[in-house]
Length: 107
Image (cartoon, helix red, strand yellow):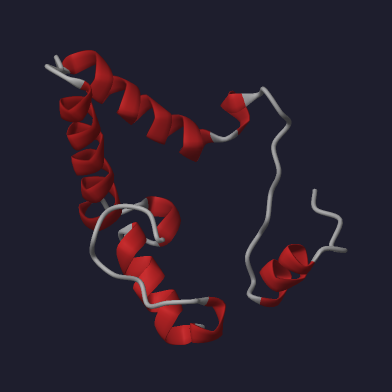
C-alpha cells in the first residue's frame, strides 16, 4: 500500500485513482501487466523476423494497435489513447503536451 506521503500518492487520491504496488519479482500479482507481456510474447513466438528492423517495426505496430484499437476493461472499454485524450480534456494541468496519435516516445 502507498504511504500517502508522496506527491504522486496525494495526486492519485485526489483524482480517485487507486495506486497499488506489487512486490518485486512477483509478476503474477499484476494481471494486467502479465496479460500485456503475454500478448507481446505471443507476437514474438508466432512471427519470424528477418532483421532487427523487422522486429522493431512489428513491435511498433503492436503497440500502436494496443494503444489505439484494443479497448481495455480496466479503462471502461476505452482504448488507452481514448482514455488519455479524455484525461487531457478533464485534467489538462496534468499534461505537458496534448496526447497525439503517433507511435513512439515523447521527446
